[in-house]
Length: 338
Ligand SMILES: Nc1ncnc2c1ncn2[C@@H]1O[C@H](COP(=O)(O)OP(=O)(O)O)[C@@H](O)[C@H]1O
Ligand SMILES: [Mg+2]
Image 1 (cartoon, rainbow, N blue to C red):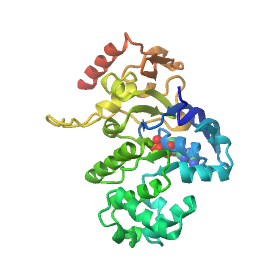
Image 2: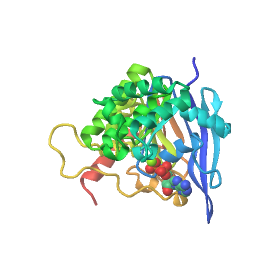
Image 3: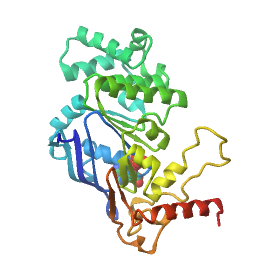
């Protein structure tokens, strides 16, 4: 068996606050294989961004305490020097964030920025880097690379800017692309184009992708495997098909029930999970989802066990026999709200 490209083990992150340390991520473990797309899904505040920033050494060490391991090609990034991390982030792992402006400088042209990026990490000559920059802009579906290269970021639409950032991310042939809600700020048509672009990258370059989203619709389209996060933990993890055809965790039921139907009449109101995620310093003991759970049992005030199956696991007391009954009871109670 080959080892995974990225293996995260027992990652924990806490921030110093006036009240002491507040835990944000607790013992998070997952892996990413070569060439696969892993989606990390969860409502806003689940800790998705903090998890990836901590892995890449991008949190401020004065306030963040990070423990555990994040092995990339066998090297623990949490123990790496700043120099080594910069090398990994530039050449091997590319990060695309929700707001493309964070990756672009307003004062330089697009072409200049891509060329600089290429030259810093590859040592190509200026002329070769310029040619490569135009090629990359073409690869991300920009019709007039020469014209766009001469423009400044503010002259482009949000969708075009995100394409430019993806082109920059690709300039070093990264083996792992991490995209943190890359389409959240874009309208639906542009969103579809960007997702299409990510799919092409995987196909043509064999890149591994970690795609972070709060949208189960995006997961359905993109993921090989899914990690469902809630309150800084993985509550369910498995193959996409398994999760969509038979979700185990009541939080996953809720996420799936909130996807708008693709066809047929649209319901008057889409389901949304009642309540909101707990503040990190007010997480309940036992199962953190218990206050919002439609199937909570008395034992849920204790730490839930991890249920395991062939292609999946979930952090929940409900076992195989109890799940279907609990889910249909939960559905009935939604149809007749108290
Ligand atoms: N620098 C920080 N200091 C303290 N708390 C933080 C910091 N960054 C994020 N958090 C908290 O961590 C939690 C998870 O945030 P985040 O990872 O951004 O969630 P997501 O990306 O899933 O929406 C939130 O409650 C947020 O307020
Ligand atoms: Mg986030």
